[in-house]
Length: 174
Image (cartoon, rainbow, N blue to C red; front, top):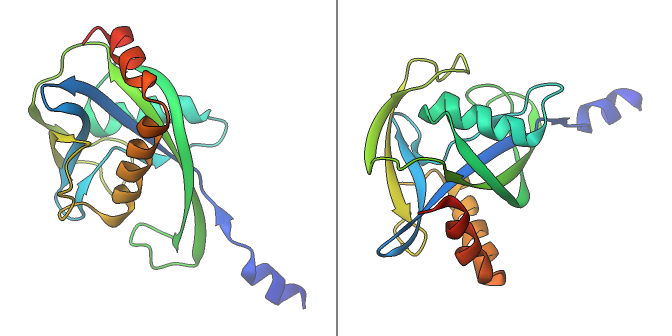
């Protein structure tokens, strides 16, 4: 009986997803990148033992994009993914709570750039092509499915709190 109970308990691995936003002529843009293997994504990674969710969001942003300085504005929400463990998601089933944060850059960022990823062994050395994606855009065909959830969460968050847009961009100075 105890063995079967142990097999049903999933490992929990928290993920931090820092969503860098900017105001553009077309509305609100979110920073995304083309992963050379897995489609369009938003920076995201594992929260290390003893690390706060907020610290993980800032660290992951730096490791995956090279951005050293961003203002963490708020936590937009959380959702859970049940996926296979390991770098190829083919191991035992795990529970991944994703913590989605809204950030603004402390400096003006270019429209596009390339960054060589640091951090995880699986992504270290990969080149990510960064660009801005309008939150109003319905074109998510190239996105990894998990990040479509993040875009929907951000859109719902801003719909529920319309005053946040003004607050967000008056703070960032953009």
